[in-house]
Length: 162
Ligand SMILES: [Zn+2]
Ligand SMILES: [Zn+2]
Image 1: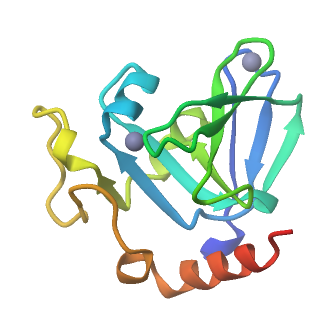
Image 2 (image 1 turned 90 degrees about the vertical axis):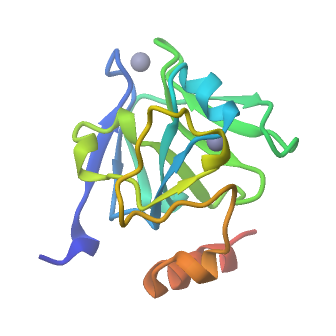
């Protein structure tokens, strides 16, 4: 099967917001930073990074709320205007062209396990990272860890930036 033609549907809890990822993501981050722990109310955040133009809104609309972030530059969290569940974020560093889809909002979140664990310095001690999955203390160089195909997609997305 051509994985590029795979799609992933998701949405909020009240089902007003429904969206589709038009392909597999660039990468899936499991972030163990304290900010993600606080925002999720749990132990980590699971984000699928994908080009914004590969995310189709199938139903509803999102409300974008500026939220403080670890970098100090802020993140924009897209939430359902009715039930307020967050479906994706845009971070300052990656810009508007890359969305961080909240994997837990997908209908089949099991299809997107983490490709890499980041900010493991603040990982909660009971969370055990499977052997063989890359893990870094904080951030990492995309060039070192991303598949070539994802690097090419990222370059194309950045080139389209207005
Ligand atoms: Zn909703
Ligand atoms: Zn984080």
